[in-house]
Image (cartoon, rainbow, N blue to C red; front, side):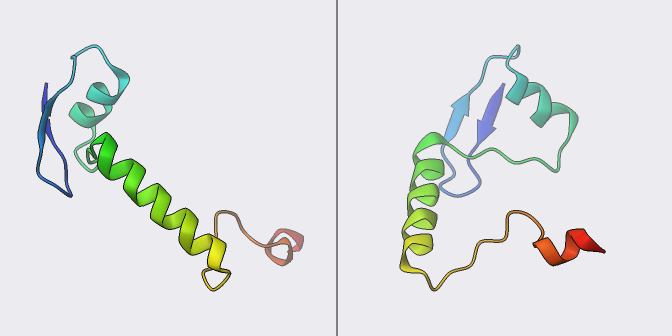
Length: 67
């Protein structure tokens, strides 16, 4: 399966049997991101988190769980 990175427009080939290929084929809302772009974004996110000025909301707060 041919896939195109949404950031850098590089075209890669995925095997048809991979779970990622099946997810991309069955759910068009999911997008593909190549490995270099994915590592670059994760490194930039980690550096922003390390500054302390960026709040990353992964889960709900404790106050939301009480109600």
